[in-house]
Image 1 (cartoon, rainbow, N blue to C red):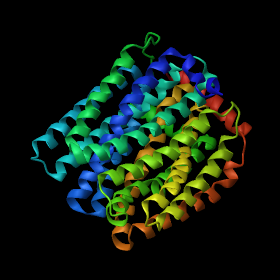
Image 2 (image 1 turned 90 degrees about the vertical axis):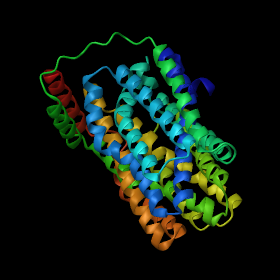
Image 3 (image 1 turned 30 degrees about the vertical axis):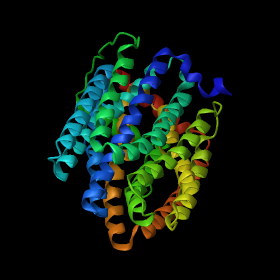
Length: 421
């Protein structure tokens, strides 16, 4: 069982990457928790919470396509190294700003926007580079599931630590720890032994590359449908995290630690789900699992929505976290194991746009609705919409594999890509 769950560790480069990310992501979740709590604590505004999520993620929507083109046209290792250094500097600047206690909310939002821009270039390069780190390509689904497991393990640990540190040492300490944690990723990258980079000769310019990536999606509905479902879930369902500070402070009458625990229990469910996916044997029906877990996600949100006691609410946060995790992990797996290699960076950038682009728009929407009808009613609506999305996409999710016509289109597009790159 253990060897099955961690079989991607047979690749030395991936093992190094996993170790570095495990440390860095805890700092990332600490910073995210601290930023959201800091804004809500200072403003007491549901709408400002939505604006903060928007500031964090909308830049990824604007720049992720460009990030995908750069990932396909340049050395992904170098791009990733630059984005990690830039993220370190952003966190250090945020820590210094809060430490001086001479800051305005707009400055926090501006630095949050900067991090969103950095992530727009980081995500396509990082996701595409994972493919190069894994020596045995049959281990890719396992590697992607393990990636998700460290994200959600960090989500379990990071917010809980952030809640305690916020109350004892303040937000500046959370940001400082995050800045220091990026050293782990940078060190792991420098220790890797990747093949020498060979710059591809390209007959097309960046704009043509963008256009080719878009047409590739249009002509491969097996990938486009996954993208569309993820976009809808990201718009209507995933922004439920926007109202968690409201539950922590107003409904459960708690503090920063309460907010941290809420996020951590989401992380518990997500980590269980990620380990479950990592343990699946090659060839498992991921679409069926995606449908079932989307239903669980919706039911978890509905059950949690009107809870007024923190302890009784925790199991439903775990269920929601379990179901939520599948949206990104399975979608990523289905895309990465289907997409033509030459299109990987661009298609992942569209994936990032669907994921990061819809969430900030949804966060503004959820923040505005919550301001009018309250957090419980808003979360109830979100859970109901999640169930509807699962039902709408059921016909697609029941299809076990690609249609033969889709496979032919993929082969034709791969040939065209080779001719123009």
